[in-house]
Length: 278
Figure 1 (spheres, helix red, strand yellow):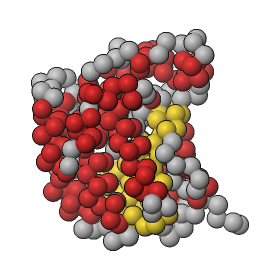
Figure 2 (cartoon, rainbow, N blue to C red; figure 1 turned 90 degrees about the horizontal axis):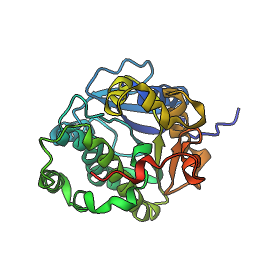
Figure 3 (cartoon, rainbow, N blue to C red; figure 1 turned 180 degrees about the vertical axis):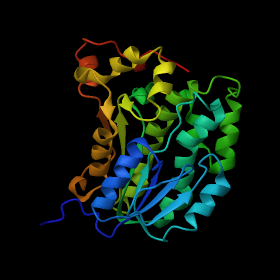
Figure 4 (cartoon, rainbow, N blue to C red; figure 1 turned 90 degrees about the vertical axis):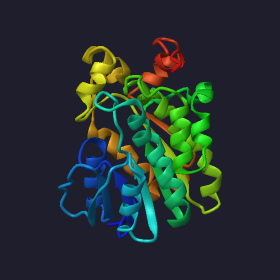
């Protein structure tokens, strides 16, 4: 049978594999024959992965150590791990959700991603309309290196703000950052895309429900589905956009929400994400 997705033997690095969307994606990648290096603070017990590397994405030294255990050449990167902010402070939430991906991209992927490789970040539909709020996070996006990024984050003066408030801003920042990376990686015939999930039934479901005032409010962001997505339903488009099947898809923000964004565009649903400045 023809191998359409092109993952067989490919070195794939994925963050957050212990649970949720990343776990489902990791299982798919293994099934497709990839050599998967799974980074997470929690144990990853998925049969068939090449290696689990315990990694604290809020700690630069932990990230650096992890990449000493990964092959020099990387075919695919999946930046999936994230925090809701309900159990972590503002700066740690933003660091894991954004600065870690930025650092990995600049320190490692720009040198080690193979020509013709692919990068996919999981952001969120909460990061829609990011271009209207660039002034809120541009200093962090433009910062040079980990230390400068952390300094720019601290300069926001939001250390004592609840961590959940960092979620939307970090997702806006990652959407912006991903688009800015397209020209560099295109020179290597490599692709950069983001997948923007709607509300999904992961281990953080209750945390997200708390942040929006209850599960009913969370379901408002699910379009015509009127239910939370399963982790698999977000992992599948993620695996697709980094595959050979998507070889001409680049610089795209794939909204996976069963029609919620369509409803906004035709005016039959409020634009929740165009009215909130942080």
